[in-house]
Length: 117
Image 1 (cartoon, one colour):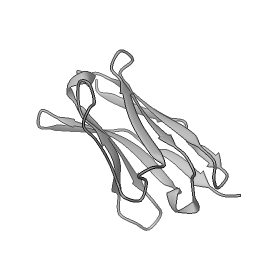
Image 2 (cartoon, rainbow, N blue to C red):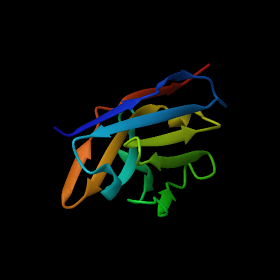
Image 3 (cartoon, rainbow, N blue to C red):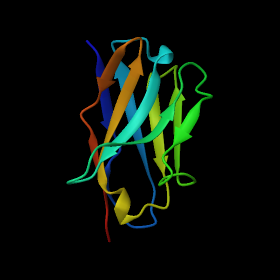
Image 4 (cartoon, helix red, strand yellow):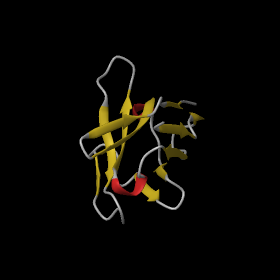
C-alpha cells in the first residue's frame, strides 16, 4: 500500500522557520521525483519545490520561495524534507507531498502551516 505521510506543520511566527517531512512507503522511493505543493484557502494548488530521483541533483523552486525554502531527500529513510525559512503570512497553506514517476502519481494528506503572530 502506497503511503505519503507529511508532518512538521503548525503555527509559526512571521520570520520563523519550520521543516516539513514526508515519509514514503509502498513504492520505490528513490526512483521517483518528489514534489511539495501548497494550497492556500480559496486558491489553486501550486508547486513549491521539486527534487529529482536518485541523487536528487535536479532541484527547482517556485519564484515565490526561492532563497527561503530548501528541498532535500534521504533515500535511505524514504523521506523528503522541505525546510522553510523567513516565513510570511503568504506562506500560510496546506502543504502536500507528491511523488511522480513511472506514469504514476501519489499524494499525501497534507499538513497545515499557518504563519501568524
